[in-house]
Image (cartoon, rainbow, N blue to C red; front, side, top):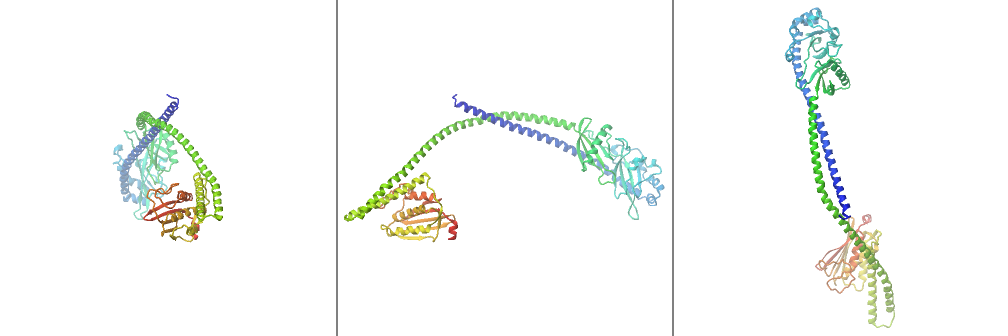
Length: 587
């Protein structure tokens, strides 16, 4: 391997390594992101499923409770309509109230308590009380007949006022310890038959339904009066959960939510939902504790599955990245070789361009120097011929020859000036000062000069342009453009022919058109080529740089010169200049 090839191969190897590393980073990032998103989705799905399960179970419980509450409300309304009880309440005959109600509520209070699965169909009550006009409990004469309650428990039935609608509440029978028994209470208003006002209320307590899912391990309870009742859990665990629930409910204004807890060292979700919104009784919440062991195990399995899939993806990405890097390094190596060859070619082209530029500079400098050197002898020759013409005594034919020679010196001077101007254009040394130039005045002056020439053919001149049409340029150079076009129109015309000159403004441009009769220019003939001579012999003569110089000057002014058409004894040239908008608008 040559010394020049070693750095090139090392560069290709570095490119392959960087490409492989970049592809592996992308694959690893995508795999990690997919693993993270999949884990989040699984966790969110699990919590959503638990929430839906809790809502479904709680909905079932509420349906059972609604059936029982509806049956109880109907029974209480029927009870309140009894004339003896109604009369006892309205007459404030408290000694007759509870004995009268005992006979009517005998089927609710007596008999064995039904099993939980039949609780929805049963109206078995644990106690009942009546409230007076202020919402306070009317003390029964014989508590045994209406269900015994201690003083603190009975005090929880005080509502402070009579309810207008059915009210639901929950009260703790043993308020001294966490985990005591809890009762569900329903208060039904009793209305006066005369006025329709609420005159009392019947409060009945019964054992609440308990919700426990044997398949998922979900346990339910009730939180009321700052105490948790969840008999399925040990009392120590209930005490710990009670403190967390109190803090969560104190800091939340939502009727339902869930949060993570640990029960017996195992992670679980605790759901809560308000059971008695807008009730006169203290707020009570349905509590469900759902174990996460099954969900965590499923999540752990999914993590292993996703991790395995990610490992396979990484392995596949490793192999694919290696193959792609190898495959892409081949065109890169070829590109390196082509780049080296292109750099070598560029260096050769730059060297050739520099050499050409030097030669062009020398040629331009030579043309300028030659033009300057030729001016002096031509001037001396012209002065000598003018002196000879001023003498007397020569034959007439001698004066004719001297005049012809003097004309050629003037022509030679014009050629030298044109060559010097072209050399400055080629070298990029010619700069113009853009000022407003009156094109109309310039064309009129040159048309007058053409008519005064002695050898001018008999042609008709037509002109059509506004009085003041201004272009942006330098007057000497724009004058030279107009001069070349008009002299060519005169020189290549025929006797009795026409010259038509027109000009107009076109937005940001001024367009000058010079048309004439005479010889047509053959198609494909490059009349703008420097030192061009017509392929058709003519009596007129020219040095072949006038049109080329005129076009270069027009382009220097930001315009252009072109042959529009030449056919059927008619030739038309068009030159465009930049317009002076403000001046033309005023004109």
